[in-house]
Length: 268
Image 1: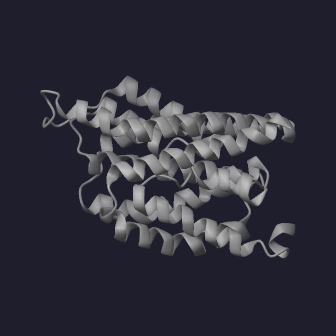
Image 2 (image 1 turned 45 degrees about the horizontal axis):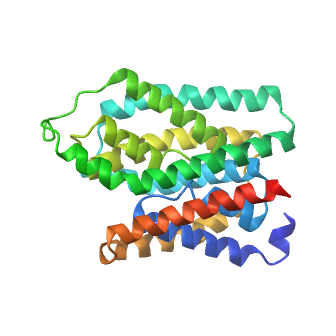
């Protein structure tokens, strides 16, 4: 692509490092920040940005999933019910893109608007998570093992599947907060572990489908991974040194800025 030949590759590597650092620091950002960066910062089309980011997210999340499984941080019944909703939901959206072949400019405008809305919701979820978690911990059955709430979990999975397939956003901040509201007896580490493991097949299915439709740039993907691996490692190392409220304020502001940067071009 032209921007790779114009010397933009250091920006892509640095962007991968910055997003990876925030992912390691906060556990959120692989989809919420990478896609807006690729669209607004690099200038690639929204469809290509979503497809590339989905494969990026599946790889980065897979690197953390085994550790969560080994530590017992995954509630597999919840993962299964989420996947029963999310995978068909994503498949419907991807089938529509493939079969209907919507106008690329119309699809790009739809992705920008839906992505901006999803980012604002993510920012609100990041800010609201401590309040929701504090309220949940006061519940009388806080220490009880959770039973799967099948219909709400299935609906949550369906919603996440549609959002992720269209925008690559949803399986992080939105998923964790929604799971907190549904399963207040789960510890924070189990909420995060369950959300991460569920996101792997979802992002891989969506990413592989976009790849089959030609919506993935492997060169950009490689450069992003080159920067993100050390970024995640560094962010994970210093996560305990920064107050949680500072991280959440910064991340919420960054998400809002990303939403604004996506919507602003539509005004011109």
